[in-house]
Amino acid sequence: MARQIVQRQFGGIPGGISAFVAVSNFSKVVLQSYLPKGCRLFEIRNPVISEKDPPALLDEAAPFLYVGRLSPEKGGVLLASAAASLNCDLVYVGEGVSRSDIEMRNEKARITDGFRDLRH
Image 1 (cartoon, rainbow, N blue to C red):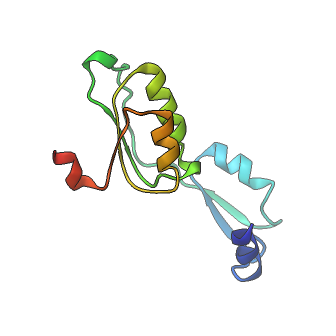
Image 2 (cartoon, one colour):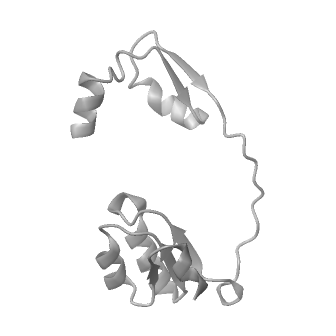
């Protein structure tokens, strides 16, 4: 909420901005109803093209790797629960407030303090 107040009061968002960029048609459709009348909305699609591989078999795959901040909005706790229910290995590279929740949901999950810990 504080971020929204700062954005509106000091950043002029969205009323003080005349052009916006959407990264997909879906986001463009969602954004349109929230933007001020008369603003320009450009769609710039993701330039990365990736091929979808078939699903890996768990017994043949390396551990799942999560790299990022361990905070509620990132979904690390949900991932810990899913990995525990599938009994698959999971390694986290990161720190944050969700660390204890992740450890409670998945006792086998390994949480490192950075890339240097992965070498061991």
